[in-house]
Image (tube, rainbow, N blue to C red; front, side, top):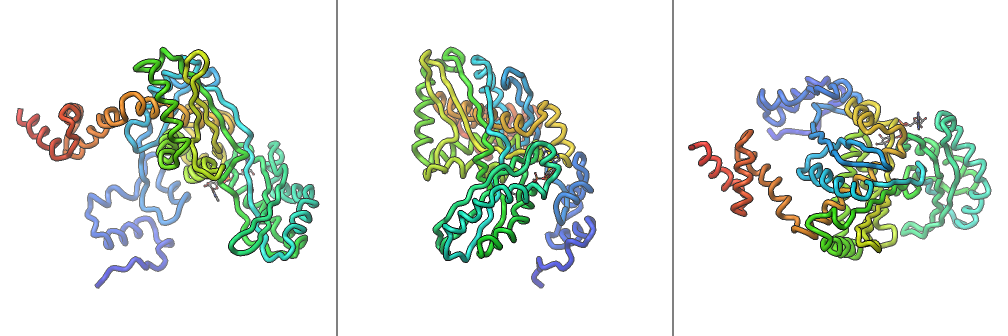
Amino acid sequence: MAKTSRISGFHKMSLQERIQVLRDFADLNDQDVALLGQSAVLGIETAERMIENVIGTFELPLGLVPNMAVNGRDILVPLAVEESSVVAALANAAKMARSGGGFFTSSSGPIMIAQIQTVGLSDPFAAKLKILERRDEIIALANEQDPVLVKLGGGCQDIEVRVLDSAAGPMVVTHILVDTRDAMGANAVNTMAEALAPHIEGWTGGRVFLRILSNLADRRLARARCLVKKDAIPPGPEVIDGIVTAWAFADADPYRAATHNKGIMNGVSALVVATGNDFRAIEAGAHSFAARTGRYRSLTTWEKNRDGDLVGSIEMPLAVGLVGGATVIHPLAKLVIKILGVKTARELAEIGAAVGLCQNLAALRVLAAEGVQRGHMSLHAKNIAVMAGARDREIDEVARRLVEEGKVRVDRAEAILKEIRGR
Ligand code: NAD
């Protein structure tokens, strides 16, 4: 009989019952099952409170980036990431950026946007003005929803109203701009938008449809810049023109920009994950911001200054929080915040921007100087060595020989391993 994934009441089962159902469904053995149902750091009970239908927890390596200086303060940056070379590249580039004093940051403030969509209007432009006339009332109504946020100095500050011409006809979209302080703010602004819906319907005669946060958090921008002295960048100052040219390629071409920005997010998202923040929200914000001009472009800029030094800058939305979501539930997330020594969500966002810029420096330098293959291959070779069964010290030796031969393949790794073990 074919197995069915239609399992009634799955969410009501206990952890052990769920694992038993899974065991039968996927023919798991004792060894498989031993990987499930436990969590040393998070705690399985905590995991069960975080999401539904938990069967276990999933670990990622947590690496530490040395050498970073942000606004004159030395910091150690923990990153949670599965990809080899991210941590090493950051450590390396952070060292180069020290020649110019490290990274210098700023931010726009933690303003999030929630959207309220009103449809069914024959007079959308009049409706827009009716909503704008109620600006102060809207702000007051929104702030009634979150006295805690208001007490902390945050809350709804302003509104914007746009008329969109869409495939489903005209619609009026109201934005509320909310200072969410140290929260990422999705729940906070969604609650406000929800509460405003019936009022907007009453004032306009239209029907409110969606009311939800926008992840294009372009009022919550974090910025970082750095300078790398021309004699502090290997192999030498000639690589600077290459970096600027490589950046210009990304800025001009979405195919290159996608990979360029992906590299930036290697660092940013690893920090976001390590702090228990919503990495999908940050990714969505970054990429939509990169496309804000109508063309998808680089999140960074690289230039050569008058002295011939390399100067880089980044500006991107970074809606991270220190309260709310998993940030206060995950014990490691709290520890990471302690290690970073940040007291506000803004400081965390600015470190995120510095990490993104630093990663981009590392990637562009390698691309311009050595071709990405060589550096990447030696780390990739270690993975291949492990796949071939190498352990402990064997891993380095197998990887080294794979790179020397220029054949980073599992079959070669197996042959080399056999040879080593035969010695
Ligand atoms: P939250 O609602 O848990 O916490 C925010 C609330 O905490 C504030 O409204 C405020 O009342 C209170 N608070 C206490 N101290 C504060 C301080 N110092 N600064 C600010 N607020 C303080 O969380 P949230 O940040 O509103 O929502 C984040 C969660 O929402 C994340 O888990 C995210 O994954 C999820 N989410 C995301 C989306 C999206 O990105 N599209 C949509 C829905 C939900």
